[in-house]
Image 1: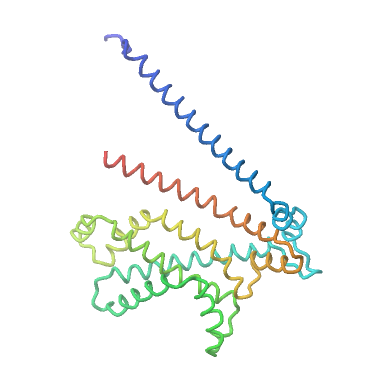
Image 2: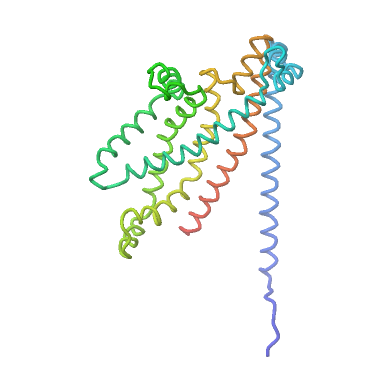
Length: 296
């Protein structure tokens, strides 16, 4: 048996040199990006700090004392804790997210159905998506939060503002998510449908076992983008008198003539939205790499 030999030659060292050079250039580019970003942020902070009204802005928006008082609240002075209000934003976001996923998918499936029996529902779902995608969320909150209680519909008109806020956010974002689902369904290759029909699957089974699993996987990044917007729009529920983080900050500012509470509320929202944004970017980049690898 011939002894194993290691491939060598004048070109082999150049492979390692080239790889080392690429890694070095990548590291240099990364550090250059970090340095330039830090420099730009430092210049912006310095400009705001040295602005003619910078001191007043720091006192009204960046006061550590007021920020802490707004964060923990003080019931004896009628101050609601911002952190407790933010918990309201979180659970409303979770509830609405689940409902939006369900109703959005149902609307998308109805719109994509070719059954003649569902023609009226297809028409209504089209009107629904066009209508609620064209109206600002805050106007839907006003219409549902103040209109439904005034219609005297029995127990439907006797719910809490929190219920009406969840309904408003759900019906609005279901219209957006339905279109995202529909785009995902349309992205499934036609030969997948042909193959499903060839093995005897009916339209409903094809949608359930073939189309939807692929469609949902394709639209996860856009769905996350919509949920980032949904998380931020939970701040609008304060217009119905719900004591969330925004309303708690507003109460503190009204009683103490200081807006540090708004800064605290903003930071709390950022603690949720930034990780979700980075996750979305990562999923988008991973999907792009997979598609490029498939093409090549």
